Image (cartoon, rainbow, N blue to C red; front, side):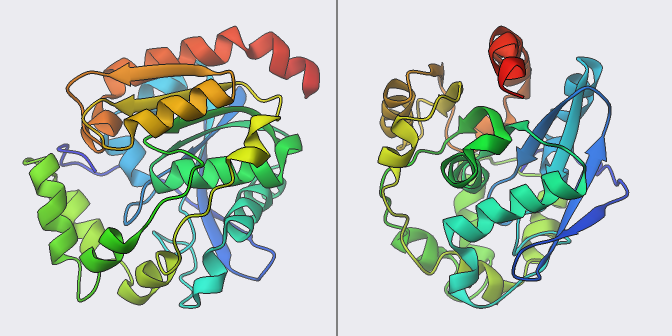
Length: 267
């Protein structure tokens, strides 16, 4: 979700998940792989609009931009059981297999951060480092989100424009183009607490949150639990913390380079 107006379109590949759902992704650049996982109602294009892709490519990262199931050009099942953490984690593993990647760093915002966390929990052998923005592994009631998608996408857009008054026309277009039944299915269950599964993993963690995001204390708590790093973003909310690529890109690049020797030893 970005105020930038010009979309960047790239050729997509498609992996097939374990339950037969096609998972679309873009594979850009060369170097060590970094998987990018977007938030709810968005797609991989959000990373382009927000200004992550070009600077990360210039820093020498190979970027894997996944359209999470239920979104973008990926399959959109209407069965809530299709959106379990295990299923979503298996999607990432399927994309890595399809792209010929054994291990990768993962970076996700909001829902995408939850997918990244689930992948680390279910497939720790595929994850070199974990970066989450506005996401944590503790229990969360999704009833407010379910209410926002009860009838259409307009209540959700109204909420977003309170956080980002200049939300881009392209973001609005992508949001309205979603399959409502698929989004509703993806939010049908509350998020369970799976922090215990992540507490003992030997995976470097960078947890990011805007300090105006109601989740920020839980994000910091996760960083402490994982013995990782916490990056607070002053005066940023859940959405503007994602849009602050100017601060996040160098922080992520520096973090991945600091933990690089450690992760390469395990590759």
